[in-house]
Each structure stands twice: as C-alpha cells, then as structure tokens.
Length: 179
Image (cartoon, rainbow, N blue to C red):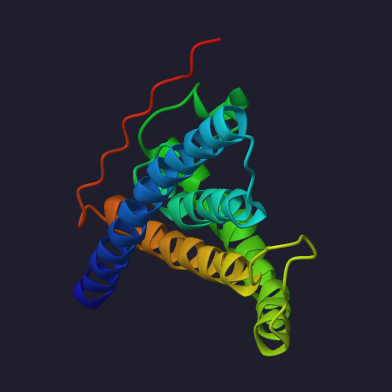
C-alpha cells in the first residue's frame, strides 16, 4: 500500500506543477486579451496570432488545471445525494463516481484525442486565419489534460481506499454550494 501512496503523492506533485502552469495561463490569457483590446481600439491594429494565443492559453488553463481542481476536491458534484451524507458515505460516492464515470470517460477521451493530436502535429495543421498559428500546441492540451485527469483520478481512488482502510488521512470536508 505504501507504494500506491507514493504513486498518489507523485501524481499530486505532477498535478501541482501543471496547476501552477494553468494559473499562469489564466494570467497570460487575461493580459493578452486586455492588450489586444487596447491595441485594437486605441491603434486600430488587430492580430489573429494574438487572438489565437489567447485561446491557446485558455485551453491550457482549462485542460491542464482540471486535475488540480479534482486534487483540491473543488470539482463540481451533483449535490442531490452527496450533501445529505458525510464521511464514509461521501467517500463511497466519490469512489463510485471516480471508478464508473471519471476514469472510463477520461480514458476514452485520451484514446480519441491522441490520434487527432498526432495527425495535426504530423501535418503541421495551421489556422485558416491570415497570420494564424500552428494548431498542434492547442490540440496537445487535450490528450495531456485528459491523461492528467486520469492519473489524478487513479490517485484519488488510492487515497479514498486508503482512507477507508484507516491508512491515509484525507480531508473530506465538503461545503454545499450556495444556492
């Protein structure tokens, strides 16, 4: 079991690194967006490349930050059942969701997005806009983000099983969202 906990810690560390990158991607996306607006309205200059960089950063934020949201237990839940229970029942609901929903869907998404990324990378897929950028860096965020979510999902399963076995201290605090 110690090897599994070490794996979960390693995945958490990796997720933290990508989460930090996603945090900076949000900042860069906002900065570039504001700069684009200022330049467009003040100087009447526009750049398709800068507009595309904006959505590249947003893609990085969403796809590379999602695993961090799961790790921090801040992800969206269907609160119909979850909020009524506490402790062991919540952990069992989490395990069910992780094993039967999150992991199968993430594995399917890795399977489906990887060939598309490879195709775009090999062909040098370019934007159809004048002055646009190559598209594969944005496409890379899909299989990479889904793979990170898969790894983090496995780590969360390990942690919850460890908690049920009283071998892992897990913060299972849950605040019901404001309605």
